[in-house]
Amino acid sequence: MADNGLILVTGAAGQLGAVGRTVTGLLLDRGLPVRAMVRREDDRAAALRASGAEVVVGNLLEPADVYRVVSGCRRVYFGMSVSAGYLEATVTMATVAREIGVNALVNMSQMTVSQMSIQNTTPSPQQRQHWLSEQALAWSGLPVITIRPTVFLEGFFLPLTGPSVRDRGRIELPFGRGKTSPVGTADVARVVAAVLADPGPHLGRIYELTGPRSQDMHGVAREYSDALNREVTYADIPPEDWERELKKVGLPEHLTRHLVTMAELNRAGRYDRMADGVERVTGRPAMSVREFVSLHADEFGGRRA
Ligand SMILES: NC(=O)c1ccc[n+]([C@@H]2O[C@H](COP(=O)([O-])OP(=O)(O)OC[C@H]3O[C@@H](n4cnc5c(N)ncnc54)[C@H](OP(=O)(O)O)[C@@H]3O)[C@@H](O)[C@H]2O)c1
Image 1 (tube, rainbow, N blue to C red):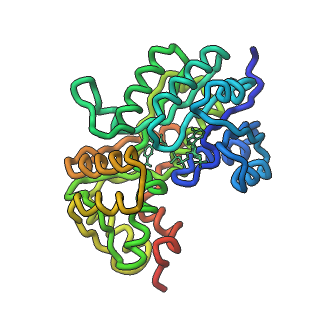
Image 2 (image 1 turned 180 degrees about the vertical axis):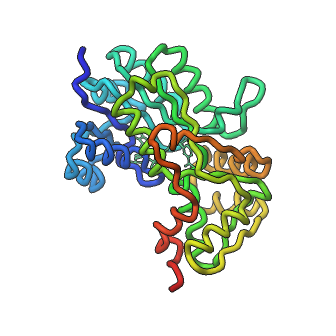
Image 3 (image 1 turned 90 degrees about the vertical axis):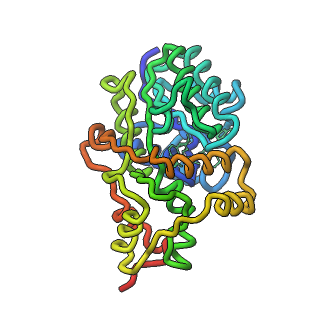
């Protein structure tokens, strides 16, 4: 069947990294037709509809739902929340995409997969599932484009450092002296939208995405200070205390184990990575920590006059 241009974006209501929601907006801005998949009918679905997307409700773990939402689309962005069913959802999507026949499947993965192999996985169930998902998609023979971002500014640094920076002027994380190069999901979404708009040159490619600088957390704290015009420091807290706090908030076990592994890998220097995927695909460099914190100053307690 010919490509009628309709693009499916899954996880379109997301509000953590919100890659799907941002991609939807960017594609609509380009005048492309978007089918935005959400899990439930709510005000986020209404906002997507108001912005011009065709909104469909479904569960990525239900094969019949996935078949219904993919039908009629030849280009797909596949991403969903960090959750225990991720591999099942990926394989379901791959099965349906093969049956229907898509021209491009943009798969959200993670940078850590670049360093994984049979002999070298990580204890994070999410990272393992991304690694296995990439294997399964490779076997599928589908026209896949793989997006491997490092840790998100929106989906990690904002929720997990916002409150302590606001209340105590401190970034409190168990990252030791490890370096990190967080990337903005605004940039990740720009990459995904550019690929979906014209997938041909990107088919089969893997894009690793980082921010413009890899530095330890004291360096990150200096960028927060510059953006907020007040002192922000880094406190290297014990990993056990952080894990206890995460458990207190009642996060699902899958997510807690993922976050605890991320901290371990950070301490071990495994997030000290640099990649130019954002600039290579979009022609614009990735946003810095300072730019990000400036844009979100209110959520970090405001900028001192
Ligand atoms: N956070 C990071 O630092 C980071 C770094 C690199 C890569 N990633 C990857 O980025 C992805 C997450 O992206 P994001 O932060 O943009 O996501 P997000 O904002 O959390 O949005 C994910 C969306 O998926 C939807 N969803 C979850 N389960 C579903 C299901 N069974 N059926 C249909 N929809 C479902 C959620 O719906 P509801 O809102 O209704 O629950 C949510 O809207 C993951 O693959 C993660 O591994 C994250």
